[in-house]
Image (cartoon, rainbow, N blue to C red; front, side):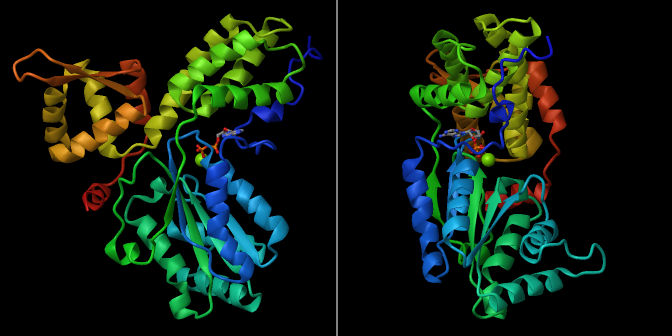
Length: 379
Ligand SMILES: Nc1ncnc2c1ncn2[C@@H]1O[C@H](COP(=O)(O)OP(=O)(O)O)[C@@H](O)[C@H]1O
Ligand SMILES: [Mg+2]
């Protein structure tokens, strides 16, 4: 049984796998290339901001462009920072230092100033241009850390003339709901590149490519792939589909079958739904999570009732509430159906699209943001 596997290349189903064939993102890749191209002529690249929900190819697109620069632009150094893993200015600059100098800065007694001085000195002496991708920058929206990081990166040329540093911010969100500090807003004016959710046909073709490379021939039929595409499209996140391919393959293997059945997919889906939910919830603001928690506790409610509870717990006004509600709808975490009956005429009935207990579990797993973030975001 051990030597009977359905997986030709299992690593194909890992999320950090960079696909050889990256389709359906041509216009985004073009915009990225347009933004970084000045670096090839020794100029500072444009600052960019990639915006879109989770699982829309943002990280992959930026890594593809960085690969390209690595091959064709010897004067450019690119650094990709995962802001979920590096949530402070100090750790971010330590990572940049590491990439440039080849080793981490001494672990104690080194001031931030000293680290940035070394980085800049290196860039100037070696005549290099630095592009920093701040991936999932929403994780820095606490304690003004995003402002501090951007400020330090984009103002470096003032203290060290000749320094050329640009930023690609990647925001896992469908709108810009963070207001930068005015002093940062005046120096960080990124070109926005939008990453919309993939259409059903695009999802299916991406999943088909993965399955063809990752499984042996005949393991997965077109019908089964359709079911996976349906689930993926429902979630709007391509990762759901990639994870389903892997899990249903493992499930089929487990029962010693040479092919994946629709039942394998259904079973795998129950498990991966939770994974998807917790990833979505971890990218939300405290206020957005509060709305989900209210719905989980109250059950389906009118928007007026939800707002009353939200206002009481968060102290925020209706405009903010409404923005957050629309975001939760677009992330497919809740449904908001217009009702025409009721005391106030038209009202919305809000309900969760996920199990209430699962939602509460995921909300509890996510660390709370500080109140300063909320104040900051109100901007
Ligand atoms: N157009 C595409 N073609 C092939 N694979 C894709 C495509 N878009 C996304 N993927 C794959 O989906 C997964 C999630 O993509 P990623 O770039 O990490 O999304 P995001 O950063 O927007 O959350 C990765 O494994 C990636 O390889
Ligand atoms: Mg990403």
